[in-house]
Length: 116
Image (cartoon, rainbow, N blue to C red; front, side, top):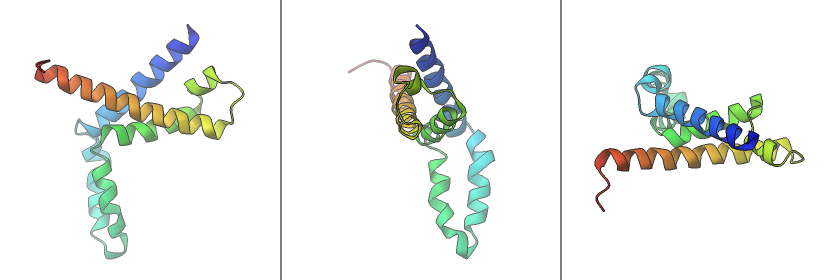
């Protein structure tokens, strides 16, 4: 039960962070506009593609999952307590991105109707 609860909290937290930053306008104000302004400088032009990643919920969820995993909320370490922490962080980051993508696509499909 502890594993299911930990995984549920982790997935909901990363989905929430990815949605707030990627879909809602929080990412635009917090990250995208400063990155766009900085990318106008010739030597910081490489920041322009990073501004596009702010609009991608799974991209944000990957980094949020990595940060949560490093800070201690790691479902992978609950399942496999003897795994190397770096591997657990990577697994958690990709689980966060995948779960966010699945939840985001499912919510979009439900909002458009389930007609096949």
